Image (cartoon, rainbow, N blue to C red; front, side):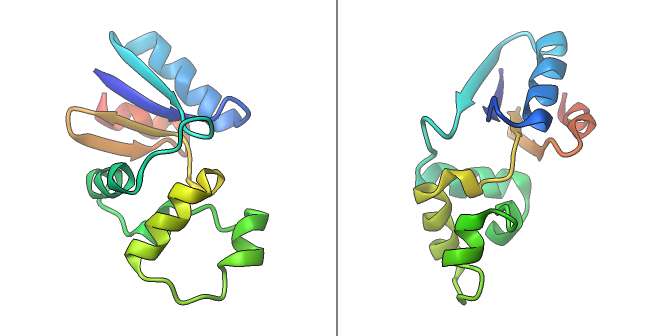
Length: 113
């Protein structure tokens, strides 16, 4: 089973979903702006991605620049910020067989298929 954390308004996310629709047999689509991941779920995703929480944050978003950019936040605080402000989460995230990738560019998704 393949899961995509998807934002329909994002062109890269739409491209990633189109790629998955061609290749994935079972696909779960999570519109994470409507159903934000919990702090626990984000922690698990970050472990699968093998990145630091800061690397999952969209640093050009206004909410980041205005509220968090110059704060010294630890990993748990960053995860909480993303859970409370899902617009900050980089997208799309694709998970399959305990592997995960950020689909930027969308071709990176092929690495775990």
